[in-house]
Amino acid sequence: MNDFKFTLIADGRTDDALMPILRWLLIDLGVNNPEPQLPILGNLRNPPKKLQDKIAIALDLFPCDILFVHRDGESDENPIENRTKEIRRAEKLVKKTLPPIVCVIPIRMIESWLLFNEDAIRKVVGNSKGTQKLSLPKISEIETISDPKAKLEKLLIDASFPSRRGKKVNIPSNYCVRVAEMIDDFEPLRDLLAFQELEKEIKKTLTNHFSDLLS
Image 1 (cartoon, rainbow, N blue to C red):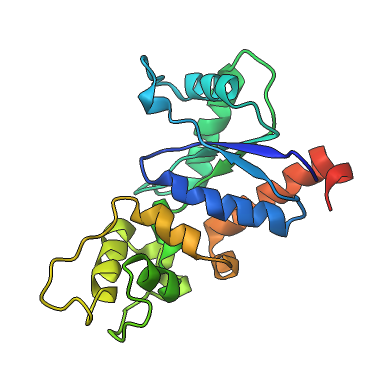
Image 2 (cartoon, rainbow, N blue to C red; image 1 turned 180 degrees about the horizontal axis):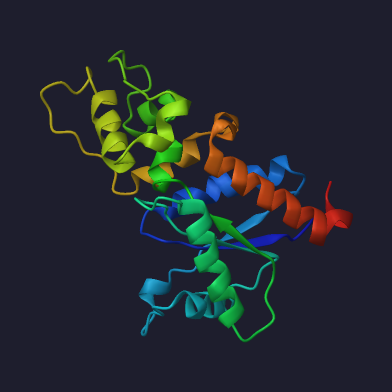
C-alpha cells in the first residue's frame, strides 16, 4: 500500500510516542510504509479547545487516510467506552467529509505502553550495558499502575546506574518518544485490553476501507 498517511490528534505533550506504536501496528496489519503526521495544534495562534474543532483543523493541515484520536483513560471507571463515546460525539459535530477515525485509548496514559522493554529504557539513558536491576512490571500489571509516567521516569533513573553513580541523572525531555523509537516490536502489548481494542478497530477500518490496497 503506497502513499498511506495517518494523522494523530494527541491528548498531551508526550503523545508523539504513539507514532512508532501506530506505525508498527499498521505495518503489521498489511500497510506498506505508512507516513505519520502529527499536527501541533497548541502552537497555533488560536489553538482549538473543542475536540470537534481539533479534528477539523488537524485534517485541514494534514489530510490523511486514517485519523487517530488519542484520549487517555486516566481514572475513568470505563475509560475505553466513555472516551470512545466522547470521540464519536465530536466526530458527528464536524461539518466536513472525514476519513475513518480510530480511537486510541490507553487505560491510563501512553507511558504505560512503554514499560515493558528494558533494552529501550537502558539505551535512552546511554547505558545499554548497565547491570542495575530494573523492576519492570509484568505485562498483566501495566494497566493497573496509577502513575505510569512516574514509573517510567524511575526506571530511566535506575537504568542510568552504575555507570553514572554519584552524578546527576539527565533524563531527556522527550524521553517518551525516545523510548518508543527504540522499540522494534510491540507484540507484548497485545496482551493488554486497550491495545487489543486499538488493533481490532484498526483492522476493521483497514478491512472496510482499504482491503484492496493491503499488501
